[in-house]
Length: 372
Figure 1 (tube, rainbow, N blue to C red):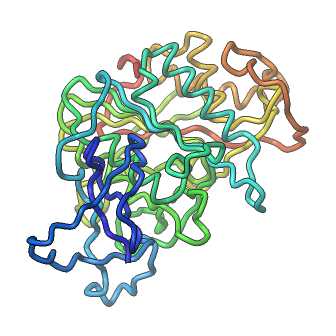
Figure 2 (figure 1 turned 180 degrees about the vertical axis):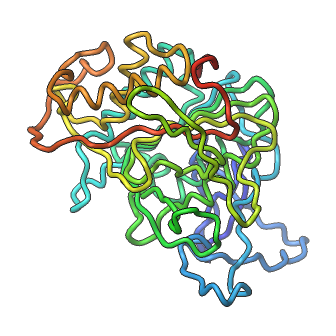
């Protein structure tokens, strides 16, 4: 059994200590935590044991609620927050599923471009960005389920009014049957870590509990999710249903069970690749020079072209980019971010996805300024 402890350097939570080991590497600060036994200390109380895949990865019969184990992911982790260099923090996760049947070509490009955007355009300190990819040599920086959970906990831990947080994910998304009655369509949305086939997916209920519900007043979180079936993957209460003319209404996605899926006073906005019943493209059709996620490319291009004035203008610009590419009227525009890449592959399909915007509160999308 693995032992959990906090990092002695940054107090990062849930460092996993294998049996027989006396030190572990922190996924957040890369520091080593060494455990020294105290011969005079009383033996620790037995710890609660959760399976490696948590409650969200099991199918619980609806008639047996007693079988559901309370989730350890329903609040920000205890203890002092790790050192943060400024009021901006980001977790950027690109999963390519290398050498598997699920392999994606554009995920690594997406996260490199997103990090460049955050640092150069929005002044995020590089030291306040955690990037998880399979290209990392450090196993603590790879997008496994465990590392993604640690990074998401770090993102919101100790946040204060005025902080701006970003979570970007580029990879596979999926759906699974909803057994707690909080989904209008009967399905939970999921994100797929690199080890999802053995460790399970990360379900929207957990994402909401970790980075949405704890968010205090004055803190702003933006999620940019480039994955299939990602329309409501943060389980936010409201979805902006916009037509091709830019007219919109807010759909109420609050669970009929009465469970609160909003924040503790903060603001959350999520731009996602597509509706819950749509798939997302990983293609060179937009940039013409390399594979990218269509949604990440359109998000960056909207900012590059000066459309990042309001949330409504952002959403319209992103959708127009994808529609124009499908109609062979657009695409092939080399932005200062995308043009750093020189390789690609052919693509003969049609991009049918429509980016979505969900939020913790309703607002006028054409008057609220967009900023990260």
